[in-house]
Length: 252
Ligand SMILES: Nc1nc2c(ncn2[C@@H]2O[C@H](COP(=O)(O)OP(=O)(O)OP(=O)(O)O)[C@@H](O)[C@H]2O)c(=O)[nH]1
Ligand SMILES: [Mg+2]
Image (cartoon, rainbow, N blue to C red; front, side, top):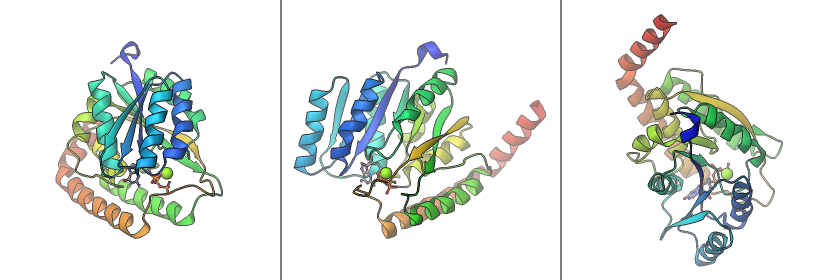
């Protein structure tokens, strides 16, 4: 694909983050990026807020789940809407406002210059980051290095990335990972599919009164199960991954 064909939207999944979502949506629309907002089964008051965001701000489409289905399921619904609307790329942004929106112009520029690649953020935390979350990421990144047989993925959990939909959607729509393992599984599967990735830092701040949906025990169990499944997936694909590496080396 060349840069002229690039049509980017943002996909913002929302669960219990309706209050911060307005600012996130406004920042995106101010950069001329249309937004697909997913109400992932929020309480009626939350749903009303999201409806008013979609009504007040132009270029916002609201997709609604009647009950909470998880971040992965919300992302899939948003990406499906993006594909149906004819977008070629989707910028995934969390609704909690933790990501520095100042990084977006660079991500858009990189997408236009490398439309076939995944443009992916890796977090640059300030002192507000909970230590347990930082440790959890290190463990995940260790396992992802094994699952992809590569040290090229500095972070597999960052929810700030631009997906090229032509290669990502066929993989994403088959995923059964509805919850917190979604970002990890997507990046590992895109690596197995041979999609090139470019990583850039994104500043991340955890506000004192911020809402986190991360359930320390339950989500860590889900993430561990995701890694177990991906390790087996790597073993099955081992001949393919090694052949591809060997072939690439010979070409250079
Ligand atoms: N965890 C979670 N997030 C959801 C769900 N549905 C939609 N989301 C959205 O997915 C994004 C990520 O959720 P967060 O709770 O911030 O999870 P996280 O960023 O991994 O965790 P923190 O580092 O604690 O912020 C946010 O935009 C949520 O609003 C869900 O069922 N569970
Ligand atoms: Mg978050």
